[in-house]
Image 1 (cartoon, rainbow, N blue to C red):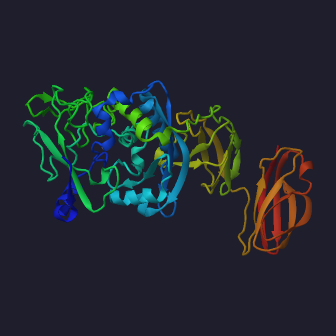
Image 2 (cartoon, rainbow, N blue to C red; image 1 turned 60 degrees about the vertical axis):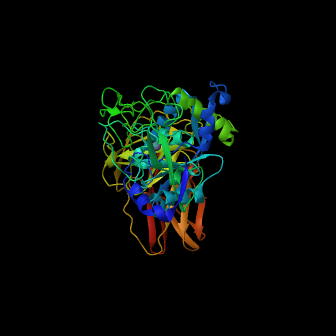
Image 3 (cartoon, rainbow, N blue to C red; image 1 turned 180 degrees about the horizontal axis):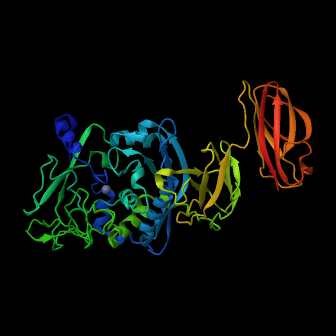
Length: 512
Ligand SMILES: [Zn+2]
């Protein structure tokens, strides 16, 4: 029943079809050739359904050209946690084989699925499911391109949304239960009157959702409309008999009954409501929470049979050892220099990622909370905060396989302007490590200088008395050197002053 028509003839029609897709999911997924083959004889494909299948995801976190706008780390991991919860009954779990950051405004907000396809062709990593989290995936909450990957809108990634599971469902061969109704009733966009019996067939455009990309062709297909009595369920709509008739192709509210308010009539005139619990339907997030047994069997068979490369290496995750419940720096209640804040926390064994939240309100309201996702260790330089404020922060640890984790206790510190510094041309830059330092250990200075120079060092106690003075030779660039005599300093608070010509800086140093 498939027809491939020249684009020119139907280009006007196509614009019309695409213009009316404000869809929760941009995927107009037909039944793939693989799924059609599979559904002729599903028993042939059955394997041990008790085997847990681990599937690698390459996650592309996309920001604009300036590197702004990445998805918030908590939303990202909440979304991954939800994805794995949605797939638990299928005995399929996803892990992060890689996390990449891409700064590209044209990807971040792309207007057409075709642009998304080119993004994926340019960035995809083989043998993984490639997921791109962007601001606007062509006007959709998300979409899946069978030959490339998944684009997700960052606002649709959360613990409340099954959109990610929906798109991965498409990726693993599942169509919508309302297959054929996408984009209206027929490719001419004619509207549906649900009071009338449905037609026996519907026609839909799935140009971009074939097994490969045919750029210059409009591809339409015809689907048989599913009957309530189940007599044509194997050939109608999605071809699954345990997803019942559903003709609703725009986002709908499932209400308290888990089914649609809209009553539809099948071609025989039998009335029914759509099932809102299906993740592959367009019911809203309040109800969509499951795949059916036949859908699960198809997804598992799709992995074994069509995409064995995804499950070839079953990589086990390492257990994440607890929650980072200790603040190392600043210590709880400590006052720190407002424009030079480094947050450091207890390392969690086997953690690959940490998300830090910081706010000047202890309840961390979303818009007044900054988030930092770090992939390199248990500290992060925040830079400048407001002066004279109390700040609250907390940390959550994750690894490649563990997304549903506990957030740490809330830590607290104060900011102040502890050292008055004056900017001079050719100024020095330096950091003290560690700070606070432990008594008896050497203290390191990491300094940055534009040229070779001799620097005078003075160390004062907190009352301003000069303890000693010395000098050191700095080479151009960044250098790390030990503060002379630092291992012998008693516990206390000190001010280190460095001066070269008319450039100087002062740093507060704590020895514990
Ligand atoms: Zn969809």
